[in-house]
Length: 152
Image 1 (tube, helix red, strand yellow):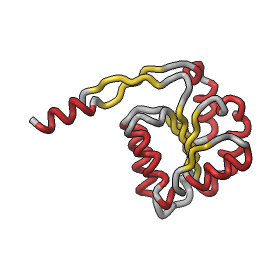
Image 2: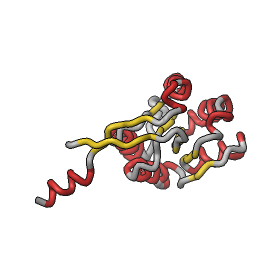
Image 3: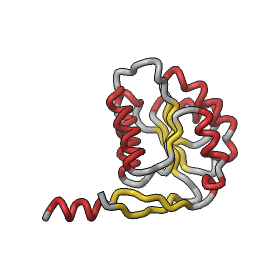
Image 4: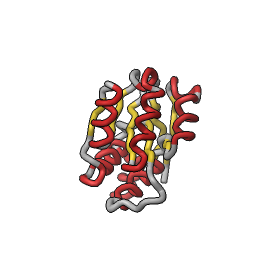
């Protein structure tokens, strides 16, 4: 597929997602980086977002709970270019009933070439990267060209 570029802005739109066994770890991570994250726009699946708001006081745009469609809502925002970064603390040792949604979310993040952290160490690398605090150009699918080719 042909590619084009988009700029991830200096002030990021960050999605925060965590499976049940990983919520406390994500809450600790968010608390540690509260000062930095407070400068960005945060989104989260329902339960995770409400916990983050309650525990840290940060403003979070909460979606539905993951099993109720929240993972798909975040994926839709990624596809629309409205999420710049995904922090998803997932539990690889416990299957979840909405595993296909989880897989689809990670697939969309990869298709649209946004940074993804699936554990605390990767999230730390991302937030401490010099790129985190500046605009960054990324390559994404050229959807308009894709449509034109499909319609010919």
